[in-house]
Length: 209
Image 1 (cartoon, helix red, strand yellow):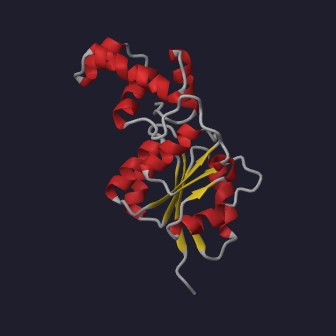
Image 2: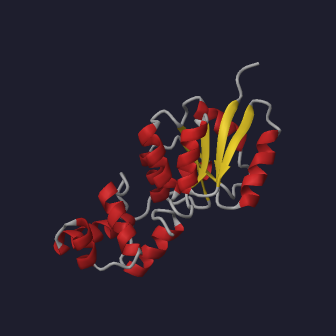
């Protein structure tokens, strides 16, 4: 019998993790090696358990799934990560793939196909939910997503910092921060700071402590 695929489940809702575990326990070739409820624990358990596949929600407390994926893949570039989300927006999908995730599926899909998706990413395939691949691009959205610097500034914007405060924090000029802010809004097709904050939180682009 071939080796079983070991899996780390990462979701901040225990009921969701329990449901996924029960779903996967019926698969003879899949084994849940551990569970985490936030991004920080996901990084720690990824180091300790070295699972074949990490199934991780994009939006997590303490550290987002996207941020956790970047840290994990920085240490283990061959790690297979399958991102889960309630949202199919292009920007979030691109951020996940840019972070190095091999798959992106929707938690609320009628047919989640979790076992199949895990096997495919473990085999090195890229797996995208049908709803994701059909999603049209947002008006004005930059194809490559946000840069690491833009994500850093977006985090500080969401935390309520002014351009000057962000400039002081990052040793930049206020004018440079203003340009970054404008570029972020243009990339996402958003024109008001309040809308930007809501979008960033809803789509897991920032960490909310």
